[in-house]
Length: 223
Image (cartoon, rainbow, N blue to C red):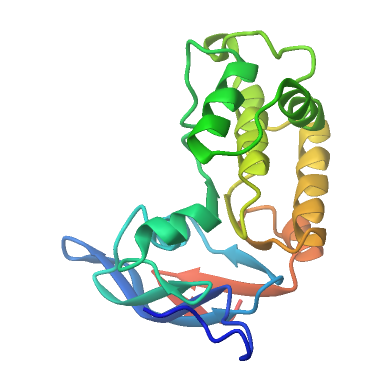
């Protein structure tokens, strides 16, 4: 797909074109069509099993649609998978952390993989931002679930994505952590990042997002 014309209006940050995903006989996502302008934030709601996580994984290119097309920043999420992955970060239920490395080392490894600045002051600043300044040299294996979530948030911030996909980001966090996460989302938005937030904490989500998409059995319905 050719790059967008610089003189034209920017493409949507996210565009779903009749997107479906099937597991066996079950349709986890069914004929979703939706467009999210760049810089906007989307609250994704629905009961467990409604298709939220599957949709986020389709956008992040971890899955390919059974039918339809997913576009991220004007790029096809299947044909231009690697380019899309450079611009997208997914905070998921799985932390994908290196268990035997410290918090600081985890960020150093990610920085090398991304080709971004992973100097000590940068990693220390990120760990301080997520409340892990006293645990920078602690192996992740000894972290609680909440501490792992905080480190995963620091990893997302290091990537500086154009599109941030947050799957239940408040899970495992104590009240202070939830407040910190709200601040992180606000900072991402202020920096121009498009945010898609899937959460059961509807009240928090409505205060953070301008748009809402409610799923039921993989289909978009009026909330």
